[in-house]
Length: 198
Image (cartoon, rainbow, N blue to C red; front, side, top):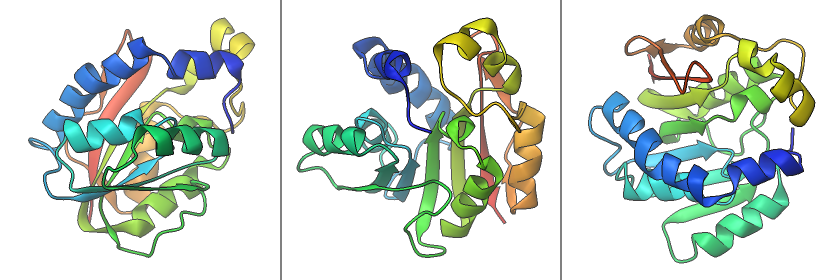
């Protein structure tokens, strides 16, 4: 689902960008065992391109392929990332336009909870990853989406959302096995983790 105006404002501001570049980058660098040096990485839901910057500049990836459902966000990312080793497209997490086993890693900066058929999105992420490939994810659990603020101010699918353990179980069902305990951050508003494709 596309973001509403409140969510766009929350996601597309300097505070969110700084959080991604510093705190989230540090989480993912640690979970990845130091980073993604030399890797070809897929970012699911690129927004205005800050995540791709983090993947290149903070995690050391050699190349990023990224997509978003919102063509306006993809255009903003194109402007932001001009001249960088990034390929951008409009796309759907449930039908990723990449060949099977073509990506060294996939990064999810809190996108999958927006996807109505989130198990299909996980299946697609698993499909495009090479054996041994790494998934880094940050997600919002169901109990947070069920709060008054999220129900009133944001637009998310209401049915079939997940808690961290349910998300991990779905990853495992698609051959993506956790490399450690899921971590809760920001007062339980998000959980993060890493999983490798068997």
